[in-house]
Amino acid sequence: ATFLCKVYYGGNLTIRLTLGGCANRPFYRIVAAHSKFARDGRFVEQLGCYDPLPNSHGEKIVGLNLERIRYWIGCGAHLSKPVERLLGLAGFFPLHPMMITNAERLRRKRAREALLASQKTDTEATETEAS
Amino acid sequence: MLRALSRLGARPPRRPPALVLLPARGRKTRHDPPAKSKVGRVTTPPAVDPAEFFVLTERYREYRQIVRALRVEFATEVRKNLYESRVGVLAERRARQKAAEHREMMAWNRAENQRLHELRMARLLQEAREQERLRAEEQALKAQETQAWVQLKEREVLQLQEEAKSFITRENLEARVEEALDSPKSYNWAITREGQVVRPQDEGS
Figure (spheres, helix red, strand yellow):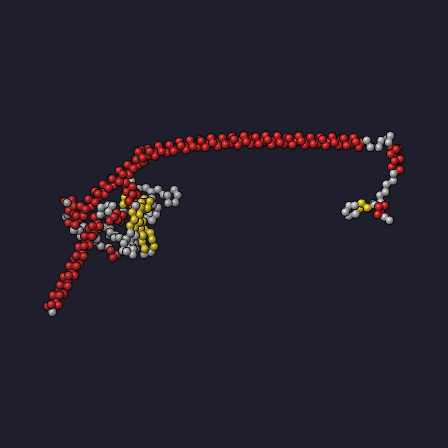
């Protein structure tokens, strides 16, 4: 087999993120590739991109080729967790349960911290009143 | 629900495992031995809230159900598209259109060939006629030339015949010799640059 035209045993077609960009500047490409290939190696088709750093308007840009994603999922492609999350956020897939759970946990933590902070201010106020 | 909670259910406390479990890979690879400070380490999994766990399992079940349904739908769509492209109505129409186009192009090609053939025949006829004409002209020229040559030769012969009348023969010999001796000829003449002959009798004093 020629270079980069290797045939692997096992493995499956996966839609995953390929890392590119420079130091301190990641940039992901959403790519359909054989799961046994390197992360940045040979892929079958590029299906979109994801820029994790927000731009000047505070937006994180994601590009998705939904037609081709449908086709590859119909051909039996697996999806990686980040890709599932992105598709859930986009609305193409349902929201990932872990994402909802993490959001709830964060909200509860923030509520607890806010409560603690308010309690501390109340106690300080009572102490100052007492003194 | 019961299955979810039974997973959290009463289990005997875990003994320290024989091999120390390695956490996430950092500086060391999987082939490096663990450090001495981690000899008696017992890893404890994080605490799980049963209500949250139950809610999470339900959510996962629903999520996987939906995703499986989506996959099935996409797979059927792909197969339908494949079938349509091979045996569909559009494919048949396209095939018929292509066949018609092919026939049209072949007919046009035949017509073009016919036209070019006729043009070629006309051109070849024209060229043949031209060739004939040229050859005829050449022949005429040659005939004329031979005629002229023959006439020239005839004229030369006649001229020679006439000159032969004034030749010197054995019978005329003595008479001619007497005649030449009786008529002296003077060669004392010069020629100017313009080509005029200058004789001494005319100009000399």
